[in-house]
Figure 1 (spheres, rainbow, N blue to C red):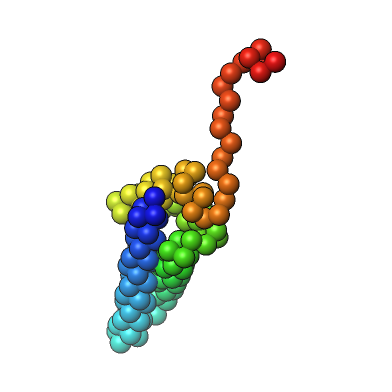
Figure 2: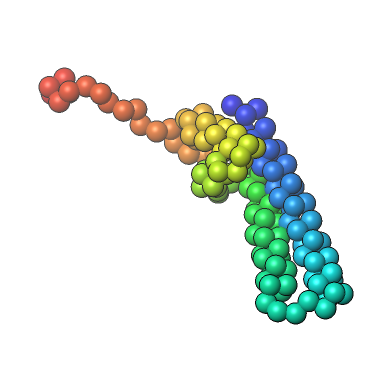
Length: 137
């Protein structure tokens, strides 16, 4: 299980690095769009709206990339909050096809078992008793 948790941590760091690079590239695209619009003398609302849309996307994707790097480092250090954050953000990752989907499924599989719970200092889940009430009496 240690190997799976280490791989999961490094995959979160890698996914975050891609997010940061995408955020930076969108910010550069926003700057180029703003410069191009000012060069042609575009006036009206559509020009600045596009620039703000690109900047918003850059901030969102870049910020989530930084967060994923932090989560990956916390997973590698076996911090409880890293496990919790990876589980919380596994669900949004599922809709980012294909790598986010694979990462989300792998995170859920690796972090939702008793071995992973022990690695992060959590007690194992209680076994589910399937017997009837008559058996326990």
